[in-house]
Each structure stands twice: as C-alpha cells, then as structure tokens.
Length: 82
Image (cartoon, rainbow, N blue to C red; front, top):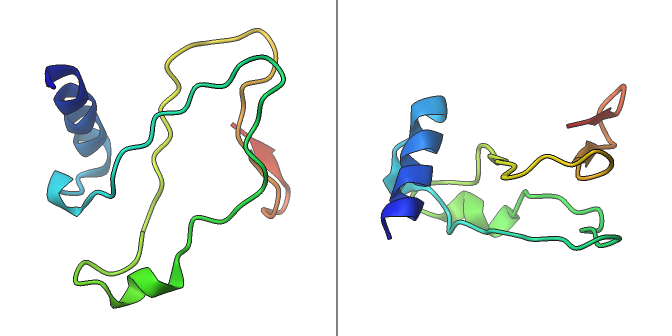
C-alpha cells in the first residue's frame, strides 16, 4: 500500500533505521475513554533474534485533540506525557 510505504519512509527519514529491521506496524484508534494499560515494549526473547531486541518505539499521532490522547512514560524521573 503506497500510504503505508510513505509512513515507513517517514519513519526511516527520522530514525535512519532500515525498514527491513522494523517490527510489524501497529495502528491503534482509541475512542473516547479508551486507553492502553501500562506495559513495557522490551521482549526478552527478541534479544536472541538475528536483528536483536527492539531498540526504539516510534509513535506517530495522526490527529490532534484538545484533551487527552497522550502517551505517559510514568517510570521516567520525572514522568512525562507526550
């Protein structure tokens, strides 16, 4: 799909990580009041993969809202919301 290819190329432009090293893209759409619970992106079994473990997670927000919609990194000191 040309739109997905365009998104992947934009991520490459920012990260300089070859597209062949990417995990599968996940696109999420949350309705009012929906959220993803706290979780970590580190997967220990991935350290044994040929490409190694995940080195970064790239967030791309496709819309802007007046309130909410952020990602919170609560284990950082101080915690931040993006």
